[in-house]
Image (cartoon, rainbow, N blue to C red):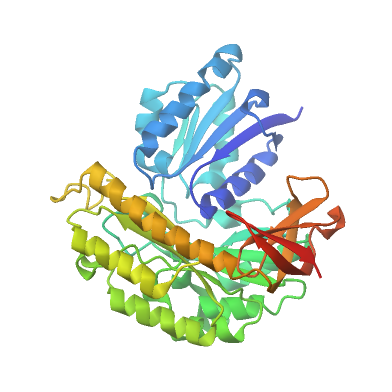
Length: 437
């Protein structure tokens, strides 16, 4: 009999990708995905440890599932991802109804772990194994749309003072180029037209390939030769890994989309040094100038943290100044949240919650102005939209432009999976409205 699996995903695109692969790993055990925990025989939380109180949110979510477990003692509950990696034994201790805890590097072992669970045993695996988990996973099944994620690099060696990724995902590891090209071809054969290459520091990619190690630029150029693959993106990047070849690719690789997510985190050199970013604000600004010189229409996205320990109002003003200098089409900004075990967690000079909130509000106001101006400037322009799904209104289809803007038009369902020219006629809060040309 088919069993029902409900997966709830927290965090970044890499977690979305991992959730898909975990579901595929369990499909061989007879599980198919459902959209509601009430319909499930197995609930799996794929967690993220980046934000503040991440573990407590997991426990809160688990508490909501208790009535389901009480009503169905055979319901299985698992916790995966970075919180599982960091606090696996504690999760088992605090929530006895959890049957399974698995880290982000061992989810290929889920089928064997489920065998133990079905025998009434608890299953915990948060190792950093030497084997390549991707070789142990089943072949990806039919995709749900014309876009797909493909993890090419995992882990991080940067050790930013605020970040838990090196401790929960491990050291930087790049996957072999031939396997990635094979997976990309397989995705295209099943209808994918756009692939986003993923990694904690994706532009640090240095996978083994023909003739030696390949950088991300070479991988992108080789993927661009795949017939039927029309668009390539990558995320997330570190400024220190934007080498000359990758910068050049933004100008000479037609299939590489004009969108770049390149976090800077702060605009004050003192704060950047305390964060262990190993670049200055000036380094970052000059880098953006070089990239825009080869791709003037680049849509730039970034990340910012305000209220980092020791940050003064003058430091924050440096961040605002950098934002005004660079100009962002999209940005994500957060108050600093202390992550246990990271170097910044116990530092002196912690910024009060009130001051951090005030700075965040001011920063977001400026970023929103820039996002609004970027979108408004699209009105009257022609873009090419890859349509993905029906919109909220009848007779409406939604897709993404080259610049990753959400664009909706009046059009038939047959647009799904097609790239079509669209004239932008209106800028809305977080999307654009267009008409088919």
